[in-house]
Image (cartoon, rainbow, N blue to C red):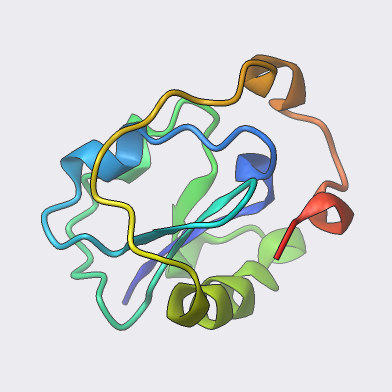
Length: 107
């Protein structure tokens, strides 16, 4: 099993989760983080650290976010590993909870 970063991370990109990850499974894109499912050890430390509740266990991913299993797997192979916490974008709070952000994902 793995954890999955879902749509609410887009344009929020908080990295609190990265700081607690013991295996460096987070990868950073231009406006979102993803988890490499091959590296995730299912430790669950990241989920409560996400201030916008964008991380779920793969078994608990909401039905309307299921496509993010594939997004994480694909982009986790392409994007570089992020192993240190960074400041979020200045407007991150404004994007929390905004629906239909998948079209804003920058690859």
